[in-house]
Length: 115
Image (cartoon, rainbow, N blue to C red):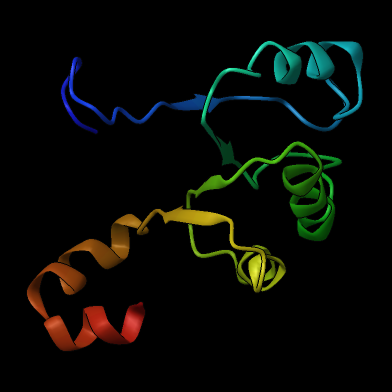
């Protein structure tokens, strides 16, 4: 992101939406959130995978596509979610599990393999 007043300034917003029993993706609440963000250039949403009655990764990716969400934060390398992302052009910020941090930080070879 460049400083305010420069020619190009990127806007990114992270949104936390409970999906499952609490708020359905097509509920009036979710619709309001997405309609309120019409002037935002890029939307990024954190995708948590811990919980009950969560939609499948394919369903989540379809929601991202439906609302033109171009960025995802995934807290851990969930293989099903990563597979569902293939070929979507959705940008990904992937969290590294705590147990992997020391090894990744101390070995370029391991970091390359992990990626």
